[in-house]
Image (cartoon, rainbow, N blue to C red; front, top):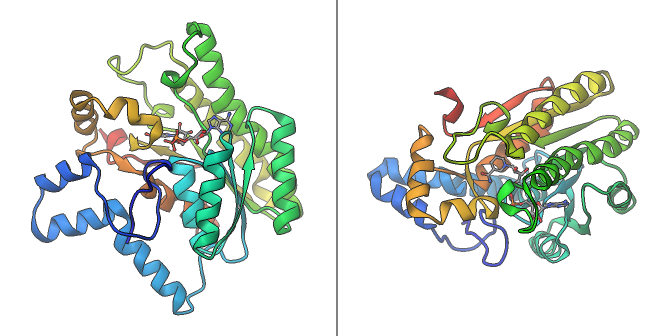
Length: 316
Ligand SMILES: NC(=O)c1ccc[n+]([C@@H]2O[C@H](COP(=O)([O-])OP(=O)(O)OC[C@H]3O[C@@H](n4cnc5c(N)ncnc54)[C@H](O)[C@@H]3O)[C@@H](O)[C@H]2O)c1
C-alpha cells in the first residue's frame, strides 16, 4: 500500500500503510460505497501501484527497464513521486535537488526498496552544477535516456526581501533557465545514448491566465510556465529526428510543498477544489504516472505536446 512519507515531500510513494490527508478525507466523505473505494484507490495510486509491483515480481518487463533517468526537483512533490515510480519501473535514477538532504533521503528510500539511485545536489540555474550532475549520472549508470525537469518555484516562495521585479526574475530564472539548462546538457548525452525523453513541468497556467484572487498579472509564475511550453515545442521540433522526444505536463493544483501555503487555508482550499471540475486537487503520484508514460517507449510517437493533468480545469 501507499502512504505519504513524513519529512519528505507531500505525495511521495512509499510502500507502507495508508494515511489520508484532510482534503482526501473530505473528498471521501462526499462519495460513497464502491465508487468511493475505487476513486480513493485511484487518488492514492494504490491499487495500480500494487498491481505494478505484483506484475514486476511475476517477471513482467518493467516499463523503464534499462533506462537511465535524471530528475530535478526530486527531493519533493512531483519530482520525488516520479523518481520513486521510475525506479519501481526499472530505471536507474539521479535524484537531483537544491536541497541535498531531501535528495539523499529519496535516493536512500529507492535503494532500500531495491532500486538504483544516487543523490545529487545542484542548483538548476547554475551551468557548472548542471554539467556536474549530468556527468555524475553518466559516470555512475553509463548514459542518460530520461530527464524530468521538475525543479520549480512559485512567487510565494521568494525571499522576503525581494521586490516585485526581483521575485519575477527569480521565478523566471528557476522555472525557465532551470528547465532550459538541464535540457541543453542532457540532449548532448541523449544523442550519445541513441535518443531520449525530456519531460518538462509546465502548468495549467502555461495554458490559461491565473485568476486575480490567486495573483496579479505581473507575477512570473504563469509567464514562466508559458515559456516552458515554448521551450518544449521548440526543442521537440529540433531534436525529433535524433530520437529525442520533448513533452510537457500541465498539472492543475496538486498537493505538494509548493501549494501547502495555499491549501492550508480551508476557505482558499475550498475555492481551489471548486475550480477543478473533479472537485479536488491532484496528488503527486497522478502526475508521476503521466510522466512515466511520456518517459516510456509507449509514447514513442509523442513529442512536443502539452498534456493537461488537471481534473478538467482547462476543459472549462
Ligand atoms: N504542485 C502543483 O500544484 C503544481 C502544479 C503545476 C505545476 N507544478 C510544477 O511542478 C514542478 C514540481 O512542483 P512540486 O509541486 O513538486 O513542488 P515542490 O516544491 O514540492 O518541489 C520542487 C522541488 O524543486 C527544488 N528546487 C527549487 N529550486 C531549485 C533549484 N534552483 N535547483 C534545484 N532544485 C530546486 C525544491 O528544493 C523542491 O524540492 C514545478 O515546476 C511546479 O511549478 C506544480
